[in-house]
Image (cartoon, rainbow over all chains, first blue to last red; front, side, top):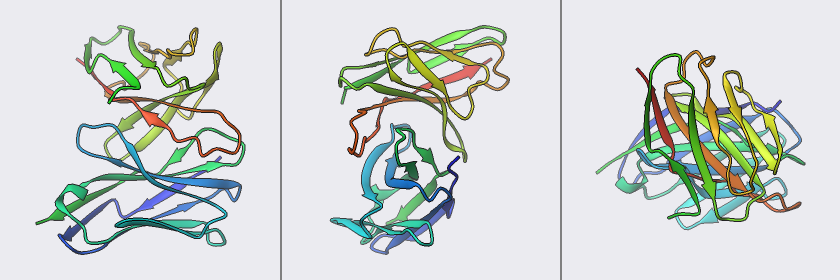
Length: 112
Length: 115
């Protein structure tokens, strides 16, 4: 089955800096890669996703890049703000399936 | 907020007792999922259901059971066979439309503590 590795497990940045979280996946049949943000005590919420026929996608301060050949994808957050502090999860879904395999999460701490 | 709800928010149980966690959705989604979340472990899939009266085991199904008698409801029972049940449990739902990116929507979670 699919295996998703996520790094780093924790990331501390100063407000205004950029943050990058990286994930690798094992199943070359995976074609959908969402990122979820989970604030403390809250439910995970989708913040951005990308399909395998696209190399990059942006939404304001958030971007995701995908390298199918290397089987890795990354989340980029620019101009970080304290409210970006949360746990971020990457996930992958093989074609034809509805289940997601999640990475173990990255705790992002943005200091004012 | 709303769309997918879980109850109770906090649940305490004694060792050896079975307990059932509720999950309800009004999003008209066919697929529903149960995840377990432990610190540093991410979200691990327990069971999922793609249609009423059908469900499949996920990666960590041992000690858990589910039913899917109605489209809106997917209750999870944590049995006494589950060795380490203390965790945060999340329910999710999604569409099953082919070719769609099937975003999973999560409930607010139930925190189960075994005393």
